Amino acid sequence: MPQEPLQESIHPRPRLVLFSGLGIDGGVFVRQRTLPVRLETPTYPDPLPEETLPTYAVRLARQIRPPEPGEALYLGGLSFGAGVALEAARVLRPSGVFILSAGMSGKAISRYLAPALEGVRLMTPWQLRQALRLTPLMLRMVGRADRSAREIMLSLVPRVNPRLCIWGGPAILRWEFEGGRASLEAAGVRVHHLHGEIDYIVPLKNVHPDCVVPGAGHALNVTHAAAVNRYITQNMGLTPPRPQRPHAPTL
Image (cartoon, rainbow, N blue to C red; front, side, top):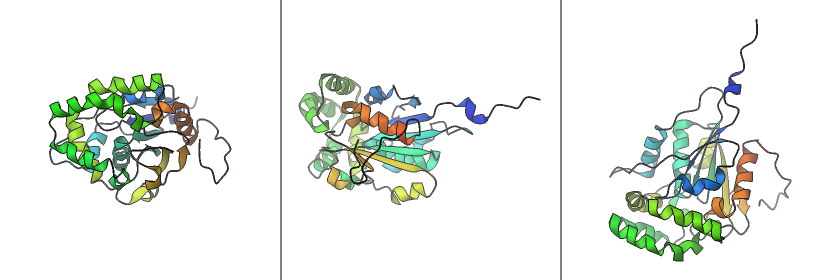
């Protein structure tokens, strides 16, 4: 009698759920669509008035299909989305979490930017949309972008969710990932932290990443997509790692 195929054969590729930055949609991950994974970029719902970042993330996590037997599920997030991914991991228990351009606390955000994130709660959605007209002038904050990278980031502006920004600015400042990465890794969830060398929004000196991308800023998955995609595939075991010197954890 022929044997039944192994359960793993049903899911030959891992599933990767990536959460975007504050107020923007999954279009920011356009350069991750070439990854050899089943990519999902959930749409952020409007926050409820009294929600915190952890309770918001849990509500969002419950809308994501949990891993099936034999399925490799990974979560990841950029900036604000990294906090969402970490909190969602407590519910979904993925194989790993990829943290891009973020820390484990709102305290990692630049002290120069923090007042603006706090003050955005006083704005109306209309006022925030008017402020977004300055986006072309602010692109230098997210890194050294070439023309194609700038076009990707500018394309996100018309679809920004102002309600999420107004709530999320203060919410991320007040956020602290309880128990740190050790709390997830004790439960079998590996945390992989990648950061840009010249991140002005979450300065490198404020975090302790596993790997640093030289010359990259905050939007490193757009400006340095090859390095980010290589890091993800290597830590999923899909490509062999490049040899590195122990004292130089860079890509």
